[in-house]
Length: 437
Ligand SMILES: [Zn+2]
Image 1 (tube, rainbow, N blue to C red):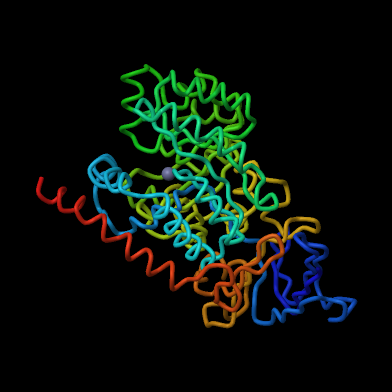
Image 2: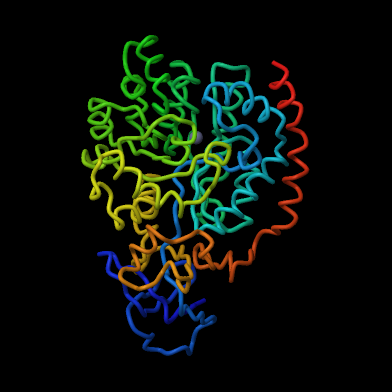
């Protein structure tokens, strides 16, 4: 089935704005994209969409997150990471049923689609329910069963991960990708990580893991193992397998050089790292070293948004401030970081996150009729520095429209919001317990 979007602006691979162009979608891929009007006119298409007043972009790719933690948005804020996790988040998560996780995943997908995301990463539990929700919603997902060990359920979670990868890799017409997801070096023992490595070697799927998120984690690692978390994971052999390391806030020159040598990919989460007071990852140093980096939101309990349009602006702004250099991350680099670079960081197919011919038709339309897009000096600049996620009007994944004129096509929004409110009630005792301490 072929679709035409015409009279639409887009930004080409070099960062030039094409004020009026068209794109032809053939089933799940981009068949053709060019400036001007389609040679064939509007005939012969199953659907013709007038893109006037809109900017066409590749869908945004969220390289790190925990979707169902949307249920814990605003549940506990303004606390140090360890207190936040052990006193509130983990006890609350213990109460979640697989059904609740499906609700939370849908809540997250509603927000992600409304803010222009087409692919997201998830590290959580009840992943079969997550995958089924993603398949039904039509999004693209990179999903892994989060594992913490030692702990009573270590072996069970390993078996669950194995079954999940076998059952769901490339499910949903290839939209589901699976990963191994040991939580972090400080929550997984060496013995357990060695088991994960052996499993991952046998069942080829990338590993996603939190690494060097806080200074305390790094200090503890030196105390316990005499080396940094990056070095420790490398010594274990984890980086001999395709790895997505989330955060990498506290990495030094030696760590960065090692990550480059081992081709470790990084998921940078500027919003979450700021809110939890973890610090700012050395993005410029990582990119200069040639490390592949994508951008993510992390969970909604630590961000608290799942808004990649906001991360786009943040990634362009934050590193200018930290490096005291207005040229640190330019607008085109920032746009690539939240699209094609994120897709590559997640080991997804080349072309995903671009507008190239033959690429998956994961596309969004951003309305550019508001005052923040005028005068039209530079649409790329407006997108990165002055846009707003509410300007996203339409979302396509694999050529299928999931969000149309700001209306969801695949998820019943009212029902999910009501379900989320029902789940909220069960967290109250955890809060009360914390207050009584
Ligand atoms: Zn995380």
